[in-house]
Length: 232
Image 1 (cartoon, helix red, strand yellow):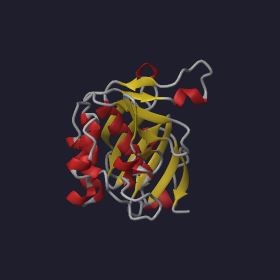
Image 2 (cartoon, one colour; image 1 turned 90 degrees about the vertical axis):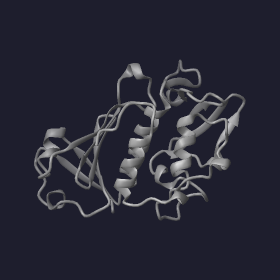
Image 3 (spheres, helix red, strand yellow; image 1 turned 60 degrees about the vertical axis):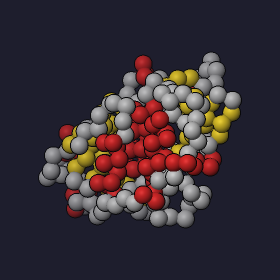
Image 4 (cartoon, helix red, strand yellow; image 1 turned 30 degrees about the vertical axis):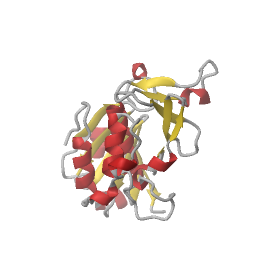
């Protein structure tokens, strides 16, 4: 299924339910517990999955654990409102954070990641006019990194296709994340059966919650360098 680049999360919700194979209303945060000043997209995501657990004991209480695998979506309780901005997400080592405008239902996304490498950077800049677009790139990234079986892989998409007897399907293309849109997309996602493939900053990752096809565990094509990340 190809997610639409529109201001809605319905297709992302459907993907998550299909991927994990289960859903319950307790995975979401009660509407009266979600701050009214949040943008529509964040409000909708918290209501749907703001308490969704991943089955581990590595997260703070009430956390949206499936969205805390690489980078970290704050729980509703951890949201940081300072004047007219709300910090809602951070990098896994807190090297950068993302913000939205409080009280703006259609807020853009701000990020201070450039401070890590650009001496001329001055705090937060707008990295995406669409919070919906940003959240789709982020959530799918966390799904891949949260898989029970995770591989990094070198090669082109057509080479990766040769590992499978099913066609690779597009899920989310031309995804933008923490960089300004004028710098180009950084994320793309593809699906092949129970395997979710991510292209992230030019590198490919394969993730699955099930045993992978024998080709991924034994004889791998010479055009591809496959490295198991987990399980160790």
